[in-house]
Amino acid sequence: MQNKQLQDAILVSNYIDGDEYALEVLILRHKQKIYSFIYSKILDRDTTEDIFQDTFIKVINTLKNGKYNEQGKFLPWVMRISHNLMIDYFRKNKRMPKFNNTDDFDIFSVLSDNSLNAEKQLISDQIYTDIKALVQELPTNQKEVLVMRLFKDMSFKEIAESTDVSINTALGRMRYALINLRKLVEVNNIILSA
Image (cartoon, rainbow, N blue to C red; front, side, top):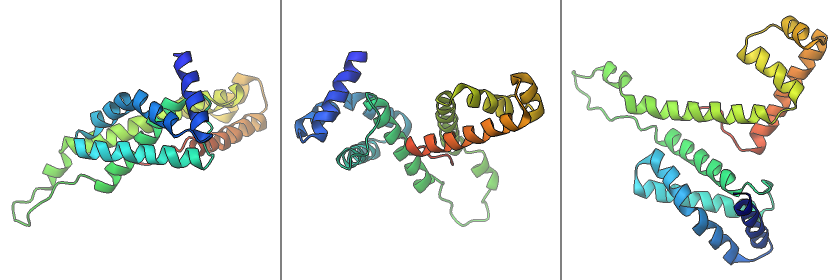
């Protein structure tokens, strides 16, 4: 696995240096995995093809503009781009059922439509997974305070006592954890609303 990441990094570097063939190799290498990932959520071949192409247009633009900085994590980066494009697709299309204007209209038929809830759940689950992964990237003392406050519902007084620091230090660590988390969200291009 490490070898493949290294090879990806070399191909990305070669593409940035002007070797167009390097990108073709990367696309061919990862096409099946990325395409299958998109199709498993979209379940429509034409739309999957569109999102797949849009993903690589975004990849090309990012690489050509010199904004790629994933150091050996090409595939996860591309998967994240495709994931964000799928979320955009679901938001734009809302997939709301069409209703005829009749007296038989029943609001409960909309509320119980599981396909609508499934998309919201998919988006919500992915946001949670993304945030959880980003929290792991925080410095240990910031991560510790954030987890105690948000997931264990501890007060700052309890956090201060538990970590053997002053309340001001606990508050400061929480503040920096949130600042760093916002930066990570921005750098990783994660959308936080459904």
